[in-house]
Length: 264
Ligand SMILES: Nc1ncnc2c1ncn2[C@@H]1O[C@H](COP(=O)(O)OP(=O)(O)OP(=O)(O)O)[C@@H](O)[C@H]1O
Ligand SMILES: [Mg+2]
Image (cartoon, rainbow, N blue to C red):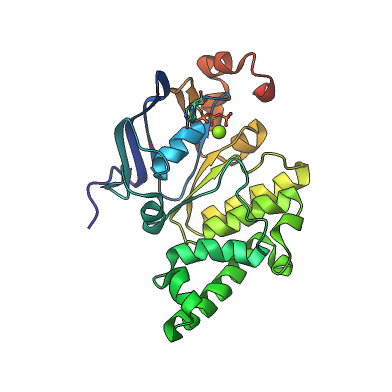
């Protein structure tokens, strides 16, 4: 059984803190993500957005504070354990394996979820073989979901950049997450690719997966997020709906001088 869950929260962040030497990258940040919503974290470069993802996914240890997923504290768990609980992510810098095919890239994600794992598949145990077939089938479904099934046998490195971003999302979805964390999925995409991404993220949410989104494209965020928090130098300076955020004087002040986000 899980612990106490506030309301319908899937993720509860309480007084989260991360220090790197003397630098406080995340400074007592608290927020709750409700099940089934698209929740966005925005803020200027260096505000601490990726660091929060690294803390939640177990890539970095927290300095202080609490991270609860479905009511249970997950601080200190290893990344693969966190992933196994149903929490998956993509990376700001593409993490596509260039020497593998598109399908194999998704299978890597799926293997994380497998009880047999890579080892038994490699040894060709009967159960492992059955499971391997299952992993291939499910990985193909994920590729179809993002529209890359026809590219399954292509080397991942030969995909255009925008499709590599979709591949990363397919791999993250292959673990069948309850919460998907996307770190700047729109970076480097052109307008039509961003429209496809917008539709994909909505489809993911509509399928029952909660989405936590870090993104610099304000038009994209304001159009898709139900709730937003704004970070500045590691501190949460605002929380609200897109309308509330866009008219918040502190948010506008924080963005002034940051070239890349003047659209706000
Ligand atoms: N592993 C690390 N070691 C030391 N400092 C770090 C580390 N990771 C991040 N930082 C620092 O922490 C601060 C927050 O960085 P972070 O990457 O979380 O920002 P961000 O909001 O994701 O920025 P961007 O929009 O540029 O991706 C920055 O000052 C960064 O230099
Ligand atoms: Mg970042």
